[in-house]
Length: 122
Image (tube, rainbow, N blue to C red; front, side, top):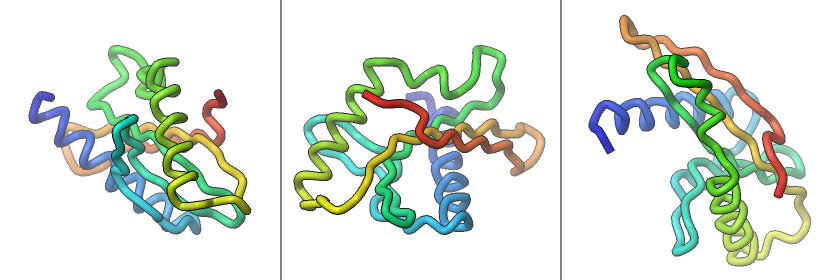
């Protein structure tokens, strides 16, 4: 991954984490990895466990960040989420897949963030 893209991804994930915390979510895990894939953020809000994919871009010139979450990516997130749920024995929760888009500003440290709740289902 290009260093600039890695920087955008890291910055976007931190911005997403701050947003979720301010919105009342508890962060359970960040960058959860297993042999099936990775989930950027796993968070809890009330009786929901949410699996959040964060997509960051420097601009929307080549499309919206959420458009990068294609079927193959959704399937990897879903399978990783199933593994996480089983490994933690999470039985009394509802589950949801969310996407957070972050468009970064080149001139300063500002950004536009869009939270897409229940962004997809498998």
